[in-house]
Image 1: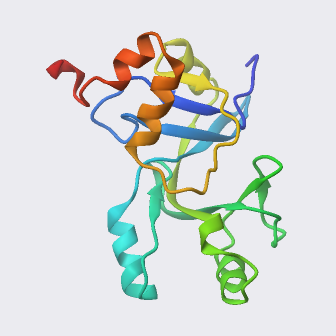
Image 2: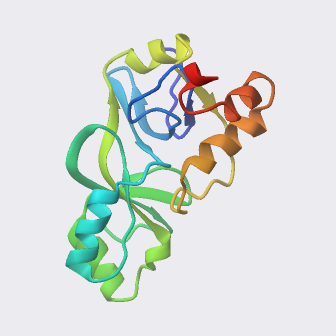
Length: 182
């Protein structure tokens, strides 16, 4: 491994189709010689969102973090950490799985729900797997500044980033989801 993609955004290329990574925007949380993990920022988990609506009585959007451990819940939070169990993403965001502290902070008014994004599962790669996928052009690493990881995102995020990259990416941004239909 020559380079860490930690803190970077990966954009799936249209070569990945038909699975959860099709048209995905992934934030890489950790990446080192043993592997990588991240969260898909633009895929909502409608089933989990419905379950939480039943439990809480108000709408809570849950996103697919990825295909690994779908019963594992994580939170990306904007602002200062309020629990000791967190990892830093950058100076503005951190990630935690400390459900009790998150719920307590919301109830106590210390955390605004607009500054949280909830994920079910995560995206994971073994040693050198992510590097190989990037080399094989399954992913395009992108430097994006001022992206609010907690904002509600959908497929327009992928399309907007592709359009901003220009060139051949502009073609992909405007292609149908099933590129064989093009």
